[in-house]
Image (cartoon, rainbow, N blue to C red; front, side, top):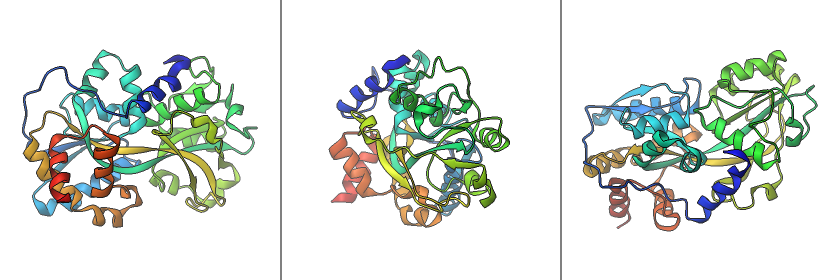
Length: 324
């Protein structure tokens, strides 16, 4: 990790954002009757998205076992070790593990491929109004929650500390807390700030009352130049005013993409049929929640043909057939 985090990820970006390749062709395996999906914390959008899939695909004969995890890294590990068939993960987390994961994590990553684009994961940097934090550089020395070690929030927080000239490995008051505990800590004054990477409309943040805005706010992050070399991973965006009951003003920030990932070893024809089922429900899923805004053939086609992202062969075949 260290201070070379951003530079190393930038190298991955310039190489086309392709996934890892297995050293030798794996033996294919078949989906079981019930599809295990690694879905993150029960309060997060990933978990709700897994429920959406379960409910909508039930009529097509699919059954889902939804598994709670600590987030993106844990989801990639679960899929890569065969403990889950599908999982949700941020793009920056995948590249982080390529560069800085241990041997076991990189081996797990080798066994995962992309299945579908789903959303923009937005960096929410919640700060107390009395914390003295007016810009990202003011985080130095503050009591800040950066997410559990196996979460996408942890990865994004690590990257952004580095981008703003701070060393997350030497900061004395960083705490690796789950988001629910972190939000409680900020509201109680036990923390100065908390990172949270999530699609807009996170159920947990939606539950906070308008009165919470008297104590907390979202920090504006608008320095586009900080992203030089990382444009393929992070994008500038704005959290619209009143997205949350306690947030009355629009807030500039950054986002990264999120995907459903799939076990590389799954048999292509079965993945083809699953892709047909899930992509075919894109509109219905988008009606359920804005989290699904990027799910669709157009986005997947662009990823496969232009960005050269590492999609499962079964998905590639489905996308190609659907484009004819």
